Length: 424
Ligand code: HSE
Image 1 (spheres, rainbow, N blue to C red):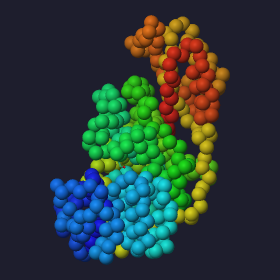
Image 2: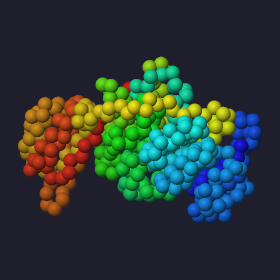
Image 3: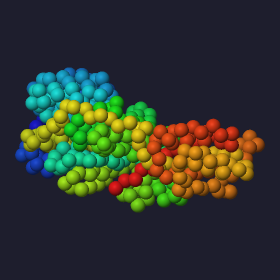
Image 4: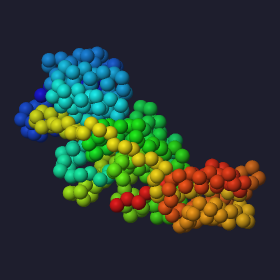
C-alpha cells in the first residue's frame, strides 16, 4: 500500500512518525506494509524524515501510478479542494483531515466518490484522535441518532481551561495554544467558533443522514467570555464550555455552537485543556461519551491512519445520506436559562429596577450575586457587577429583556450573556 502525502505540517509529521513506530502492527492489520512513495508540499523541509519518499513541490505529482491513496494534509481550502477533486476523479482513494474543505465542498466530493466508487476517508476532520466518524457511521449504524453534543474545538477548550484554572488573560492562553500547535493557522477560526461549526456540520450530516450544511449552524465564539464569568459560573455550580450541539427537535434540525454554562456534575465539566468530548444519544445504545485529544500531531495522525487502514482492508464506506436537507430550527424559538453579567452603578434602587425589567418580561430570577468586594471605580463612577441566573425563557424574550436592561441609565457598560444548557 503506497501513500502520496500532501503536506509537511504538524499532522503529516505525526503520520510519518506513527508509520515508522507502528510499522509492524500496521502491516499485520492490513496484511502488507504501508510505504510513502511521494510527498508534495509548497515548501521543502529537508530536515523532516519522509521515509524515503520522492519529494515534489507540485501537488499533481501525487496523482501517479505509484500512489494507491492520496492523503491530503495541507490545510487551507483551494489547493486542497482541487487535489481531492482531481484524485477522486482519477479513481484514487482519498484521506483528508480538512474540515474546511468538507464543510464547503464535502457534498460534491462525496457524490464524486460515490460516482467513481472510490473511498473517501475523513475521520481526522472532526475531533482529532477521537474516532467519532466511524463510531456514528459504523458503530451506531443501527441506531436512530437523536442528539450529539460536546466540545469540538481544542483551542477554545484550552483557552477557557487556562482562564478558569489560572485566571490567565485570553490572549496569553491563545498564544500558548498556538505554540503547542493546536490552533488553526488563522486562530480566528477557532475562537470565533467556525472550526467547531465545520466539525458539527460534518457530524450532523453523518448522524442525521442529511447533506453537510454549514449555513444552518448557529455560530458564536468565545471572544466575549471574560475570566470573571468563569468565576461566577463556578460559584453557581457550572463550568463554561464552548458547546457544540446538534439534535432533531420538532422534526427540524438544530445545530449550534456557542459558549454555555454546563452543570459541574456533567461529564463535559471534566473535559479540560485541548481535550474534546462528544456525547451521542441513539435509540438503541442510549447515550455514550467519547473523550480524548481533539488536536495535535499524533492524535490527528492516528485518525488519518485509521482511514488509511480501512481503505487498505477494503472496508471503507461512505456515509449514506438521503441527500435531503432538513428544515433548520430558528434560534428565536430556543428555550433555556441564561447567565447575565450586568455592570451597574452602585446606587440604591438599582436592584429593584433590574427586578422590574425581569418581571415585565415574565422571567423568574433563579439566583442573583452582587458582592461588595467586586465594587470598583472607573472615571469617578462607582460600579459593581450584578450576576443573574434566570429561569428558562425563550431566546426572543431574552433578546428583548437584554435590550431593556442595556437601555437603563443605571447600566454603565456592556451586558454579557451566556446560555445555560441542560444536558442529559
Ligand atoms: N484547531 C483545532 C482545534 C484543531 O483547536 O480543535 C484541529 O481541528
